[in-house]
Amino acid sequence: MSDTPTTQYDAIVIGAGFGGLYALLRLRDELGLSVRGFDGAGGVGGTWWHNRYPGARVDAPSAPFYAYTFSKELVDEWTWTETQSTSADVLRYLDHVADRFDLRKDIEFNTRVTDARWDDDTQRWTVETSRGDQASARFLICATGALFVANKPDYPGIDDFAGPMYHTGRWPHEPVSFEGKRVAVIGTGSSGVQAIPEIAKTAAHVTVFQRTAQYSLPARNRPLGAEELQGYRDDWENLRRSMYHRGGWPFATTRLKASDHTPEQRHARYEELWEQGGIQLSINSYVGVLVDEELNREVGDFVKGKIRQIVKDPETARKLTPDYLFGTKRLILDNGYFETYNRDNVTLVDLREDPIKSFTATSVLTEHGEHPIDLLVLATGFDAVSGSMLQIDPQGRNGVRLSDKWNERFDTYLGMVVSGFPNLFMIHGPQSPGVLYTMPLGGERHTAWIEACIRHLDEHGLGTIDTTEDAEAAWDDEVNSLANRTLYPRTKSWYTGANIPGKPRQFLAHAMGSRYFDRIDAIAADGFPGFVFEPRRTADRPAPATV
Image (cartoon, rainbow, N blue to C red):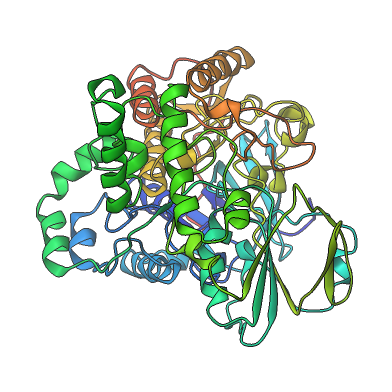
């Protein structure tokens, strides 16, 4: 740390997305703490501030449920216009929230936290920023984003390419024109599936370099009518309770078993749910789609049949057909993805059959040919869940860095705390439900737990909360046990860290979101078993900072 004067706060929040904004609001307004937020972006939004690529939308049937639930007034005053919100709509919403609750005054934008260190003597965290400033606080809240650290592939010569290169996770804020250009898109995860149909509308030619064929379901995005939206508002409290107990969404899931129907009846049901669109095929076909391999393969075969039906060229359809278990990678919702391959200006290259060898200034060289390009789009995903925390790499007790602690496994307790890192809380950390739950609501519920924890400390004169390696080991066993009851671990994906070379392989999410939040609420109510506390060494709280 430098000799720069250190500004004192009660809490520091890293990140100004859904989780960070809500944490700042609650700790400031409900607990009366002095709070400072930091974000490297130029405004609120977190991941959404960066994800502005063509076609970017919430990858779920979102409106009005991919939003905050804590304020009925906020629900009533914000008008969503589509069932699958665009990134621009989400950003406008978060701008509104920041203004409505006067949050910007407590956030430093264009300011990354570059280091964070714990001091046992003062029982405080000190952070250093990209501006060279320092700040200190009792509590460090890391709302750093599960899908934030963009993964750039290390293809030979990629930096020799002379044309514009954009990553979907770091899209420029000024418009990008594809008119008349030969565009290469590498990657067909969520951002690639969303961007490719939009890019193809104006590009001279699009060459898609597919690393993995994907299951993608039709979003059936449509305008959200005023009457429908008002119905949600009128029934909001019931919907909110449903969201708490249904994996973060208010949609009822089926209780039908595959054995309740004949194969013909099951196929008819799949057809009906396909036409409805969204995640219906996954949650409402039959119980156990992500547990029962036979049922899973039947649903997967149905989707594969749809791909062959939509894509006119049999060879292209073959390349687009997934070879993993349905839903064990993140399910994608699309708006015309498979149909795009029927365009004359779109070519598919399967990198498993024709891998990239290198780049030149004007082309991509694969094993079987050369593809001239003018513009390169990397839809290559993220170092998910753990990457944003390791980018900060805080230093806990005894000088141990998080990168040392997580060298072989991402050990946590409850997905929120790490042994040896007192008073540090993660929102959507490894081994929490994260992306398997509605993230705005998950951020609210994590923040409520953190708020209860801080109240517990202050009411009992405690200075620190930490956990133990035994508690972490028990939590690791629980998370693994739940994952192993499903088909998720059978597939290499970013859920297991398999998309990043050298990353430890483990299932990074708690597979039972609603049960998870019930569990952490019970732990708070029981006085926080699994944690260790130390008395507060001074009764003096720092005065609210003047900034």
